Every structure is written in structure tokens, then in C-alpha cells.
Length: 196
Image (cartoon, rainbow, N blue to C red):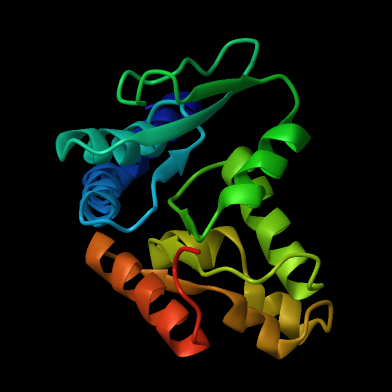
């Protein structure tokens, strides 16, 4: 097997191994959607595209709840997924404006394995929380083994470029239930309501 084919096979195998996160994201969307139907004024909000974003919007749709998609114009990548509630899909040209609208409304950030866009949004929230430019929100990284390899926060703390306590700005979860109950516990521990 030549080197390029071997690399592509390895990528495909790793993508297949991460594919179960689609169902985790979908179940998370269901949990948040059910909470909204039970009277909690909360809604799933995603980047509006395919993959994990689609899964979370789809989960909300599964239970008859509304969900929002903040889509972005990209040259060759992203189209709105079909599970966003009609009238609640917003298209942005600039990432900065999209992140602004996320952060104005976000009650938590649940990040699934992703690439530059996911990491950009994650670091934006962590930086703004760390510097107290925004009220801290719960940050959940789904898929500990992925995130520990993608971003080595222990290394950053050991190098002195973040404080050791900055590693407490987020936690890991493997299931939708862990993520959702962690968010609820975070608000309870802070003595704050999830929604105002």
C-alpha cells in the first residue's frame, strides 16, 4: 500500500471511530429540546451545518422542539442542515459576527470533535471567560481522548502560558446525559438559573 493510500485509510478509520458522536450530539439535542418543551426557555443553537451541528438540530427536531442555526458563508463547505426550525436559520458572512451572536445568547458551549472552526469558537469562549470579558459559562468537551490529543492544556499550564486553574474552565463528557447533567449542576453550584 502506498503512503497516500495508507494515510487516507487511517483518516477514514479515525472518522469512523468518531462517528458515534453524531448520536451523542443528537441525544444532547433531544435532552435540551425536551427541557424547552417542559417550560425551560432554552434552545439548541448550532453553527447550522452538517455533522455534529446537524445532529444536535436533528435531536431537537426529533422531540418537536425549536432549534437555531447560525450558518456561515463558506466557499465550498457549509449548507444549512434541514433540521433547523424554519425562520431560525441565520446566515453570516463574518465569523466574528457569528461568534458574537453565539456568545450573546449562549448558556453553555458543548464542543464535539471538530476542526479549526470548533477550536476557534472553543478558544474564544475560554479566553473571554478566563479574562472575565463575559460571564463564564459551562464548557463541555465531548470525547476526552480526542480533545486531550487535539489540545494539550496540561502542556500549556506546565509552560506557564495559562494558569493551572484555567484547566477548570471546562470539563470532559462522553455521553449526552453527562454533558446535560453537568451543565445543570454547574448552574446549581453557581446559584444561578440556567435561563433568566
